[in-house]
Image (cartoon, rainbow, N blue to C red; front, side, top):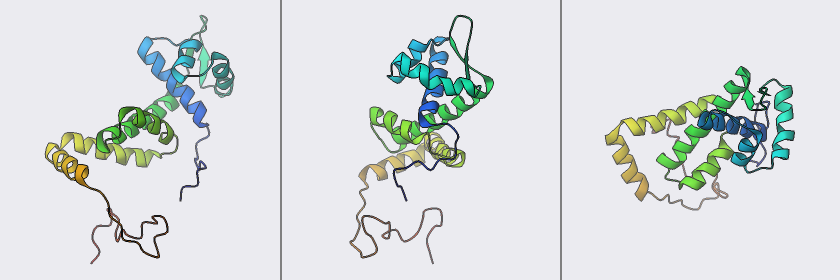
Length: 176
């Protein structure tokens, strides 16, 4: 059940993961990253980012060179790549499979990237890749999904969609 509270097992906050991913992406795009570049990418003030980076520096994930450019340590780069991967996979799923508009897919992938496990991310990636590689399946899926709208019969067991109307899970297959 979703409670609105994070039940993550990762040690970093969502903000710290955002900072690492933004630093990683700015460096990949420009070849370097100044504090102001990363702050602009995140839409925060440089002073806010500076305060937010301190715990990441203390953990040995972020450092800077003699010209004050921000750098990811090997450990920081590993975490940043993981977050970037979860974001990219989730974004592709929302946009390419579910048809969520680009801006909303960006926003929602940004929220989801912090709470998805490695295993779930891998399965989402499997589905995205399957639909990209299997043109026949993609055409059938796109056609059927575009026209599909669920219908639920009111039931005593289904208080605000407790999914009682779903007799089996997709992974289980038909009961019989």
